Length: 325
Length: 138
Image 1 (cartoon, each protein chain N blue to C red):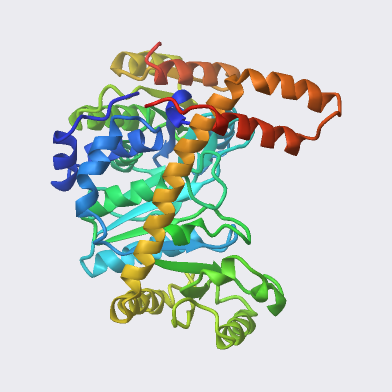
Image 2 (image 1 turned 180 degrees about the vertical axis):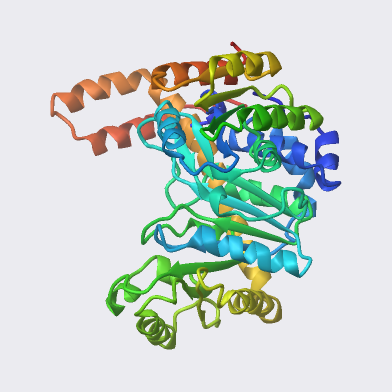
């Protein structure tokens, strides 16, 4: 399964539009295959160009159908688009059924669209751990826009805002009263609110509740989130939705927020990568530490509590001279 | 926690070529493969061979499962195989399920369909075969 071609040929192939190589390197990235690291590294200077638009919201609100409608909208304008659609992995078997493709309508030979399904692989937050790097590969491959569909998810699945330059929160009528909109989490990350299935009764109430929320001053960095009503059944509101996305992208540019946001995301990413490495090294080291077994006896016998044991283990480690790496 | 420490999940495309509208069997198989830890890309109903091959390549799957009840298997399955070959992806193994008469099944196997499951095949057999095909061990 380690089929990812080596650098620099693979990186060159991706840039020149080879979709097979792109697909294989995406697999390598998803699998944490070390062969993907130099490719991703080589392509990084070519990223940061395509707007990355994330779509999040509860399951069944129509995210896949909206993305399909937007793909059609963009293709009609001659724009190219790469899509990543994330669905959950089973916490039991690790398997998943990735079903977002069934909404996709496009000509089978249209090279202007690339659609890839991703399993969340144990990550909470609505995207996979590797979705960010996957989005960068699509960016480097030259697509004008990258669209990401998150796991149809709950109130706190806000990881998409660590990846997307514009986050669209998709809702439908009758999801709950306006108190729901005051809760922390999903409502806080919206740059655009989309009330989908607006052909159903109650869409006006949902829009009004959202405008009340927006008028209270939600949104980040001086942007008041746009509110758009759409219906993929009637194909209405799709232009407006994309217009709102582009308006936010223009705002990022004109306000100088783009660079600020980018730096914030990159800092999180870099710190997260260091934390991951330190964490796994530390875990290995501590699990092998003979002091752990002694402390475990004491904790199991209830003579010390777990936190005291943890403090002792940590301190005994810091007291030891560091091995040079 | 490094993903490379574990074996990467098998990716499998399940698709229904042609015009029949019954995908209950395909869904049951998709579910069984999921429960066996595979990542199942479910492409759904009424797929053309071109769409199926495109999906298999974009999703970089290890194995493809086709389901058909309409009787058009002798036209559609070889088309999928031919397109895979044309795309230099003839190595991706293809298995099939549905209502396929024995004589047709023989010819399809000869044409390159790696396994054919008729009505009454156990899910366990399908899972085991799909795994072997994906790992290149069948």
